[in-house]
Amino acid sequence: MSIPPELAQALKRIAAGTHSEADWEALRRALSTGQIAIAGGERAVALGGSAESAVIVTGDGNVVQVLAGPAAEAVQRLSPAFFERLTERYLQAVAGDWAWLPAGDARLPLEQVFFLLQARPQPERRPLETPPPDLVPTSERLEAAGAPWRESAPPPPPVPLGQALRESEHLVILGEPGAGKSTALQFIGLCFARAGEKWPADRLGLDQTWIPVLLLLPVSAATIAGQSLWEALRAEVRRRLQACSDEEAQALLRAWSEGKRLLVLLDGLDETQAEREAVRRGIEHFVRSGCGRAVVASRPAGFVPLAGVKEYTLKPLEDPKKEALPYLAGWLRVLKEEWAPQAEDRARDLLGEMQARPALRRLLNNPLLLRLSAEYYARSGRVAENRAALYGEWVEEAWRRAEARGANADQKGTALRALEALAWHRQTGGSNQEEALLSALGRAGLPDPEGWLRLLREKAGLLARFPEEREGRVVNTYLFAHQTVQEY
Image (cartoon, one colour):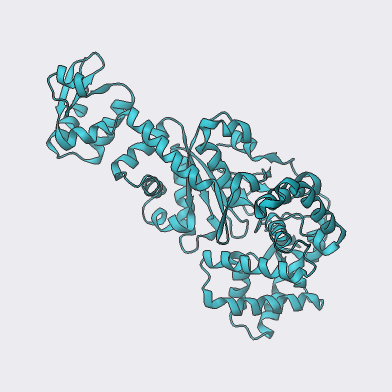
């Protein structure tokens, strides 16, 4: 049995130390398909090599090449067995990281606080269609926005995230600020990193064993824009494995891709700024390439549809007993360990008091506001009577996220002035249409009203836009991302 001439030439260049990356890729492919194999140790000696050499043989045992020194060591690291060991190391590394959720200065076990969210599949958008609203348009929110509520066809039923992954090869998870997009992406990654413990089947209802690679797009945007998404993936694999060469990371990714095992998780598309369009193109190129599956997370504000990617919108928490109660119990269990045995009872008490107060009842549909409520309750042992404390924490959290999206720290004071001006304008009966809000910002002495309105919407996520077609033109109305923030 002979081998193709181009492979024979690649082996000669590897032996001579004059090889290219393409030569390594040709060798890796031949090894992965069984076209050739590596004989080492005693078998290498029996075939005419030494115990330290690597003997390349064909499927029927014919010796093709004897490699020694660095070339032999490098070739040994291209064997399928070595890649399996490297894959295990990678999965252990990411599982150890993703098992924890940052919470201030602490890290909390993700599995205990995560609540598996549901998402609604969205219809494919038509050209020139009015952009969708930044928030799920419930009757309560539209009333707060001063926009008329119009009966329409009921939305499609929500599905668990596991079902969305099963139904769509590529998908984007859209969600309002604090809806849990990043946490959901991290949990998906953790499930597949722990596939050996049957986490995908037990927690997502999936029997696949994909290899997850999670990229924080604000961090990787420059690499994606300047090179490619693939290069960003290679850099991330190298970072996770530490003692790993570029060639090994490339070969490992190729092995996952060819085995239909590569799952790429892309967090924070809305947090990319100057590079957003280039990042979008990079994602679309990856989707077209067929190299792997992609799951993207983004806020609706500023999102532009991705070709070939199915859109899902996270459903706000709606059923307090089935959704808010277990969510609160999970957080109370880890925030205050001595409460763990009574976490369900404590959560039930907290939920009951929040439901009894109209202003606090409006916090029950947002995971971030629920978490802040649980943190306050764990610290003080009582429900937040002073709602301003919770809203203040939410605004601070929103500004931290704004800085992650490119806002400058020295813009914070002016941004809060703009927010106060808009809140007072609305509280005193002012219109929430875009032109009226821009006038209110101008009267408050703020330069560049359009820029501040855009910052509060796209970077801070404190304002939400509701476009509506009226008399043949699109009219933009705005409301605060949560109704209670306007009061604060």
